[in-house]
Amino acid sequence: MSDQTPSSFGLSPYAKAMGMAIAEIDAGSPVIVMDFAPHAMGRPGYLHGGAIGGVLEMAGYAAIAAELERQGLTMRIKPINVSTEYLRSGLPERIHARGEVVRAGRRVANVRVEAWQSDRERPVACCWINFKLSPKEA
Amino acid sequence: MDQSENSDSGFQRFVKDGGFNPAAWSRRMNFAGHSGFIGMRYRDHGDTWIELEFDWREDLVGDPDTGVLASGPIISLLDNATSMSVWTRTREFRPQVTLDLRVDYTRAAIPGKTIVARAECYQLRRSMAFVRGIAHDGDAADPVAHAAGVFMLVEGQEWFK
Image 1 (cartoon, rainbow over the protein chains, first blue to last red):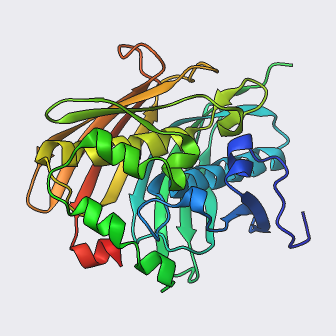
Image 2: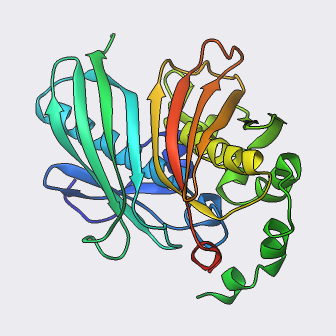
């Protein structure tokens, strides 16, 4: 994808329902964005921790999917576990998240993801995710 | 700060009203916002634990080929349930934020089934609350996810704004 128009191509029904989209590809990893909306609100005036978690996981999935595509591999990708650290309160504004594949092996991939809002240097949350990789059945 | 966000004094009154009634809280808090979108409901509670649930829905699916739920709504349910387990234990609302939450997905949730989270506050300290929980789709002995997390108690003005 070379243009900068957010696209929801390839995102899950849940991600689309939440209003997530791919804003750009940054150094090989898709940047997932989600605008603030009432359906993403936790305590009044703030983003819900679960909604932030959903964006982080989508960005993690997108990062490993993009990496496998570069390697020419077609694999099933399933999250094994995720550990999220909430660093700041999620404000009622757009959130961005980008994953970095730390290691993609044959069976497991480890991805670190960071989410930020107006200032990329001030992350609101980060997580690591382990994904199980398995051959896709035809 | 937007006036509409600032003026929810009904909400502030509600949470400061003394005592914590999990069922009433769920009726008041879980119909709107993200919890309302997921469709979370109160199910049951005891001294230190609470159960919340939501129904499978097509727009909460992660994999359209299989109909398996996305993990996002399960994180949200576990976040809410573990958070509410703290107030269930203290029997009063106290402002807190999620410091961290780890979720292990032990198996895929069966499409069409209601997801139930059972969460417990197992340790309570002056500034931290330690929580754990599971999510299952009918059999609590065969969970779809396990969670462990820490909530940090904060000052009211940080929480409300």
